[in-house]
Amino acid sequence: VNLPLYERSLPAVAANVGALRRGLTEALVARGTDAQRVGDVALVVSEALSNAAVHAYVGRSPGPVALAAAVSYGTLRVTVTDLGRGMIPRTDSPGLGLGVVLMGRLADVLEISEPAAGGTEVCARFSL
Amino acid sequence: MSSSSHRSGRRSRRRPIAGPRARRSSARRAQPRPEPARVDVERRASVAVLHVSGEFDLSAVDRVEAALARATGDRTDRVVFDLRGVSFLDVPGLRTLLRADERAPFAVDIVPPPGPASRIFALTEADHRLHLVADPGEA
Image 1 (spheres, each protein chain N blue to C red):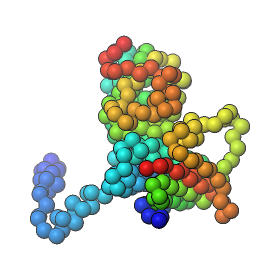
Image 2: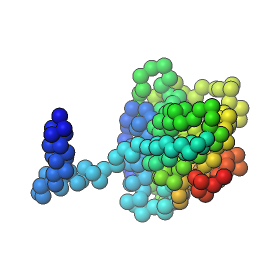
Image 3: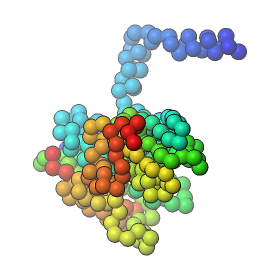
Image 4: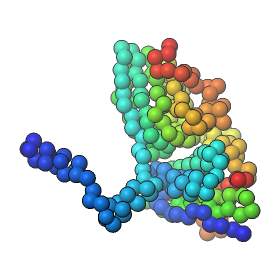
């Protein structure tokens, strides 16, 4: 049983972070999800969308960032996917950044990968 | 000129006509809508208070930093970020506060947002690094 909950793609810019985040949180609230869990998801999704807006399309016009969420057997699976330059090592940033640490604390499982087609995919799972 | 603006003011206050069109309009209002953050600056002698409201996320960072630059000067010895009107605070918003605290030559106090929007301070342990106060008037 895999129930799609939310799916939307918009240009990866700061102004769209809130629109996508609110779309998903409102779908979760409508489903009766616990308020604190909704808050966890909002912070994780906001961070992944912000990273796409800031880092994915540096030096060119913003491409898309897609937010998708589905519920399966009591687990919410959320993915944030862009088609940007992928993960670039930063020598000026020692250790894991604040955002990755926060996402890892709030999600039950956090996976960050570069799909074969390029870009970055953040996949977070939350038990509901 | 003033009569023209009065006329447009009256038009904007006109109540919608009940019926299918009005129902569609209220359905549109129920859609997720942008709530851009707002920053109001208050100066009290050498203290600048930035009252931030709405969603303090990436889309608000430039606005808050511009307001901070405008509000402060050589005589500023303390800045208060009053976040009591903030409904959502994420990592980009928090980083803005941390940057201000690290770089500013003045003291930085933060009045946290109410309820769940303030969780990020404890989750990231930023509450150990920032000076959180209960009230903008608190020294």
